[in-house]
Length: 129
Image (cartoon, rainbow, N blue to C red):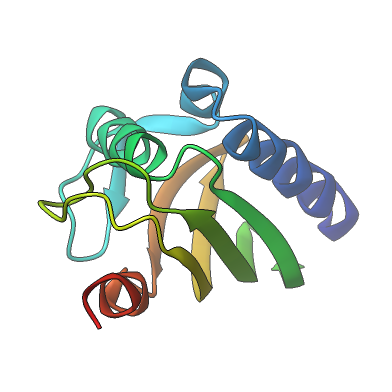
């Protein structure tokens, strides 16, 4: 894909995420997607998003900056939501969190095959402070 196509692809992916449409999100993932320091596979990716959306039903991401080249995307995102359900063993706090995220994706045939980037440490810190 050309860089402008990757930008459009990412907008569609992020829109599916922001609508919490896990069926559509799965369509952007290679079944064997690799994630740095996390379990591999589309099922694990979807399970993690489902857990996030359960704990933060209003969670949304906003793109701050996006760089696309060849088969790669680098995204600086801002994620936010209100913690109204359990998430990662933390009972609902009703706190609103706002966290920076950096995501690096590699695509093949329009699907994510590898992902790395920041973790959820900032979100956890805001909930347990």
